[in-house]
Image (cartoon, rainbow, N blue to C red; front, side, top):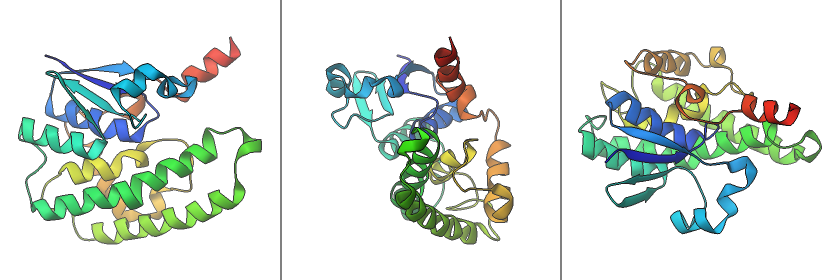
Length: 213
């Protein structure tokens, strides 16, 4: 059965999983979740995922949520992207969900997807400091090495990179972080890599077109 990924293009957490399946050739199809239309607040979606979040992977009668769990499931199923010290892979996977993507995603949302008059300046300033500290940790770790947890890419890399490929500004400039910049370039060079807006349905341009119609 072809896996179904409930996702939307702006979701960096969904992108991690979509990219994993894209790079491994795992058969999947996206199921668009209208996050900005309030789909996650509905009873139908909460019946699928009580946490009311994306992504959700449905395959062979199994429903999985939380990107880290799904990545590990796919690594086991495909035999890919787990070559290395498992503890080190998990260390960076958990770091990303706590210090990386969780903060990058929140800051990007506040700075780009809320109406300007509703953007909380103090919260944004505080998050910018947190994100800068996380980027410094990531950049320093990548100095002198190609990948986060060994000599080849793993799910740790696919998890940590996700929000850093989006075009919406949130204080991240690739040129200012040479270790991260080179690492992202190596990920982009992997056979089959695609940008999140080319891999999943839904992006800001779609919403702008609807608003202008």
